[in-house]
Image (cartoon, rainbow, N blue to C red; front, top):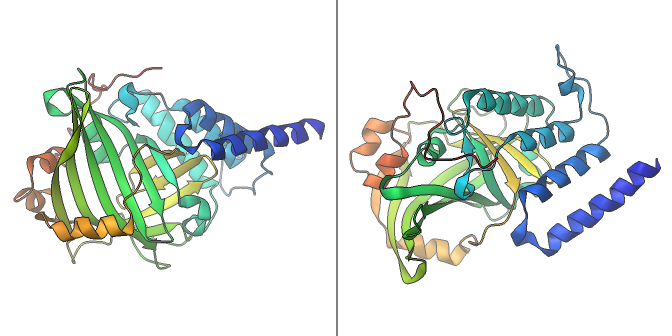
Amino acid sequence: DARRAAARVECGHLEHGNMRQPTSTSRRTALASALCGALLSAPQAAITGPVSAAEQLPAASLAAELLALIPSMEFGAPATNATVPPALARKIEARAAAVERQAARNNAKDPRLSDSWRLIYSNGREITNLATGLPLGFVLGKTYQPVDVQTGRFENQGLVEHRLGLARASTLVIGDVRLAPPGTLNAAGTRNERGNRVDVDFRRLTFGLDAVLGKPLETPLRKVVVTRQNPDAAQPANDVTYLDATCRITRGGDDALFIFVRERGNRPMLSLEEREALFAEGGAAITTGSGDADLQKGAPPELKALLREERRDRVEPIASSRVLR
């Protein structure tokens, strides 16, 4: 009808504007894009089993509602199940599961996967540990994951801010990504039956000091860790359980939840040449996939903090990360 046609024109203008300004995508623009997608989506196929009235909405509409649930956090850090009220965390994760139940197949082959993504919510242990507080007044800031499936590259880019602005640091995971073979099992025992899985190999982990007292260092200080996968452990993998023009939901190999919005950060992904130069540097070597006890024997202190055991008795959000809305 006329309203749908007008909405289609408006959404086209919005998407065209995003292409002109890829580096400044805001949460408000992300929500607007998702709502446009919901308005223009065709009805989804019926879902087997009992579903709520909300789950009968198109997947794009559910995804827009999911994004609206996730609060903005101080310093732009991703929200986590340990930094928002428990009731809100349960609501976010339940809505994410509802979106996933309507998700399409073969998301791993979707060309929209290759882009820059900003993490806005996770219950994964590594993110939770960083978001619940770092020593010496440092806190986690914005966290990005650029992905390029065609060239087999991905990165996890974490900004680390100081509450008083004394310094700025960063963490960077450099790895390889590729389509996972059909039928493979991940660490949680989930079989790749929908074509949504990518296998990942972690190649390097770096910790850097980038600025002091607001002034960027001419030569940032950097510590490099060489990561080697335990051959007896399960292949690290991510399942892209939902993907549209704005939102992406991923499950880690341990079934941890990661919710992203499409947004480009200020740090470009390393080129193929820059990656090879970094790999040639070497660094302290650790083996992943062997359990924390083995990993911590030769791990640097930054990595020990990253992988420390999460407290199981935590029932209230940690005060070190404040909700802004």
